[in-house]
Length: 245
Image: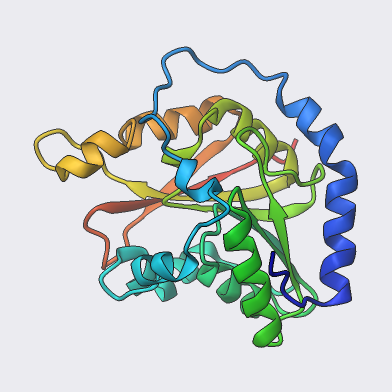
């Protein structure tokens, strides 16, 4: 297997994450999952495939025809990132948002690129090394956990990924725990509106915006607002926060 060359700092932080992951996972699995959650069968199998072709996904994810890519500057503005913040990019994919976050938060901040796809993480780590980005760590998540320590990040970013969560209540619990009090959660996902949304989205996305919003609020978050993004026709952007006390 090809292992990208990454900085010693990246390995050090990743080692800390792995050392704590068994304890974190044990806490996550204690959360009950709503019985009504259903997903298309095998929705995440292709991402866990050791033969995943990253180039194929680069051609799909990092193109101007994709809303969340063409609108990346406006999305970044909506995240309101401050220098020195620690950010978790959950479901990081090919990592283009992780790179933007790392450059925005600066050397005093840090970005955790979390994904369930080892091939994506290898790509993100190699790209960071090639581009001289040292404030980024790749983290292999699970179906129930983002595998980050309690109160370790200021912001969690989930872009076109929440509808892939196989056990959303448990994943949200791990996100809630990882956020610092007052930290924020940014969620971008697809509108699912019968009679309006594309047939693919109706079959691929398990629920609409109102359901996803209610699930996040039920996990303990406070809904802040919905940000209107000019390039969004199929997507929406919601902002939440973790209560300070």
